[in-house]
Image (spheres, rainbow, N blue to C red):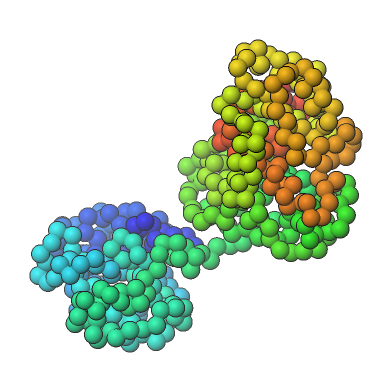
Length: 489
């Protein structure tokens, strides 16, 4: 991670609009900064004038002549002599807004040779680190951290009480004894990792999701909320799902009955998302480089009934990688099932039929239509086994009687064909594992060579986990439409 990545992250998180860079050199940093207003200060002595310099001045002259200019964030990367860096820090703090930030480069040199004055090495940090030590010695009201990347990126948060956990050491000794500094640099510089940086500087807006229904219905609504938030704000949110997954909490409501509308009284506000998906680091990217969730031609509210082949996977995969990456518990279940049933996904025709109450939302394929499609694909790929996943027992019986080489995951819940749904039959104490098991099976299906499915949230998420729609045969027949072709390939 580079200094400009850190600066851009801070600009986006805190909605900074005014940026100053001291010391432009070849323009590598300032020309990568995404900020509404940018000023660049450089006398042009070392490398001429690069693109991005609009003040051909020394930093001292700039601050003297522009005392009325204030910035959200200032980056100091000018003359790498501590005597000058001391002055740049003082001037920058004076002209940084409260709770604004001053960023410094080259704070964590790896060896003494890279700090020597005059310069003796190609890669040179100067003695910027000494300015950090002097600042930390006298600082009483500003937070300071050094991110351990790109030769040390220092961050001063103006007028924000120090939050670091590293007790100050003997700064005077460190200024004069490289060996002491080297041994104690973590505390002296308040070094933090990139991961710790993201945790500390992650004041993201929060998106609260409260939809409660079938598992993948919850996932779809959550995904849609994240996408809409991203398009509106060009930043990804932290997601609070504490009032979601109520039908899958073992200590949630006592009895689950069939209902409609997505709202339910929440009895337990613990967020159990991490039972299903990893808590991955959130990173931002510009949505304008991608089209919407689908090009179909405008995304309707019911994403489950779109043509999965028209999803913009390049964009959506970035989102699902962050928010819907399967947890280690789910992956462990998946590994167990693959071993138990001797599943070789490269030789599997996976059939996923979500039936029962789904007819209330869309036209379902008849058993005959499904069997004809299975038989056609099986004839073409005779060396493939059939993996069948459905919530209707009758369909399993039909397929297994027709084909000898079928795999049925016995652990998943199935019911007789009815107007009910599986999730309403699962008892407390079994709900979390049942959802984890179902996720694991959907992941196996998504890895399979060929996939036959009907449209709905389950089918949608098989494609999203697959990250593409190649070799997916989708049955789509909306209630209010008469399609020319039921099967989309």
